[in-house]
Structure formats: structure tokens, C-alpha cells
Image (cartoon, rainbow, N blue to C red; front, side):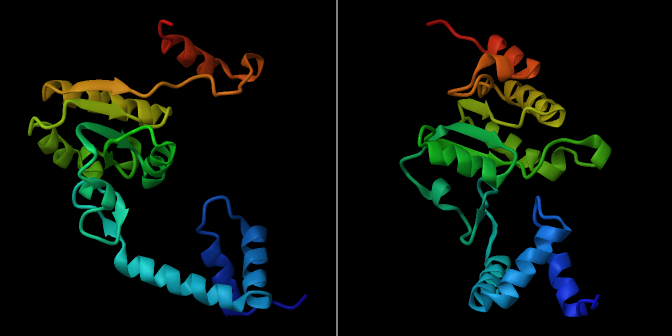
Length: 199
């Protein structure tokens, strides 16, 4: 079998940096772009280069933006007394798509993980604490992931908020809409019971 060119190998290897893309998927993508959609490949390369050159973190919430301050933080209609903490820009985008939250965000870009050497300073928590001490924020909404690290991060943030005199809430976790109880795992059911509310 003919060995692929070093240029093709580098392209396949580069595509593997995407989440969920293994060697075979990366190879299929590379062949598709080179054989069937060279114009699409050019647009992709240009868009990536432009994004890498232009996109930075918002100075206020740390979301990804091509402006010093993102559109959410610039929106005068947002409730600045509510601050939602999420781990990634994708989490903030998911919440935004629901249209139910009209407060502000703070993006951690990760979670506390001492084993990986990720501490409070790596997540911008010094900056967050300064914001909490201004008195503008009345409620800190914790929307970190339901993992061991996400829970540890939520606990740390809750303690920080309490020391600043800021109220804390945690988004509910549990039974999804349309979910059937018999198919849910024990942890999901446990959280659903713990987060139950009066009707």
C-alpha cells in the first residue's frame, strides 16, 4: 500500500485535535476536503486563521469574542445582579440558547483540579472575587458540570460568595424532559430527589 504524503499525514494529524475525531474520521475528513471540497477547505482555513488572530477573552466575563467586551456584557438590558458561573464558553452558549437567563456570565475555562495543577488563579477566581466584593452582584448561580471536579469547584465558589455576602444558588439537575425513570442512572435520580420542590 502506498504511504501517504507527509503533507497529508500532517493534515490528518491536525484534524485529530478535534474532540471525538479518531484516526479514521480524520482521514475521511482530509480526503473529503482534498477530493470533493477544496473551496470549503480554503474557507475553513481562512476562518480558522481569522478566528485565531481575532478572538480573545472578554475583559469582563472571559467569554470568547473578537471585541474587548462581548455583546452579552455590553447589553444594557441584562440583569447585572445575577452572575452565572460556567466552565466553558459552550456551556454559556447552551444557556443563552434557552432564552430564560437574562443575567451575566463568568466563564472559568475549566474547573479546579489539583492533580492537573489547575488552581483558583488559573480560573480567574481572583478577578471573580473582586467582582463579588463590589456589591453589584446579589446572586451567584453555579452551573458547573456534575463531575467530581465540577462539584468541588462549585463548593469553592459557594464559600467564596458567602464570604463576600453574595447569595448562592445551584442549577437543578435530574430527570430530563421526556425521560423515563427506569432508564435513569442512580446518580441522576438521587440529584432529582435532592432538588425536588413543592408544587
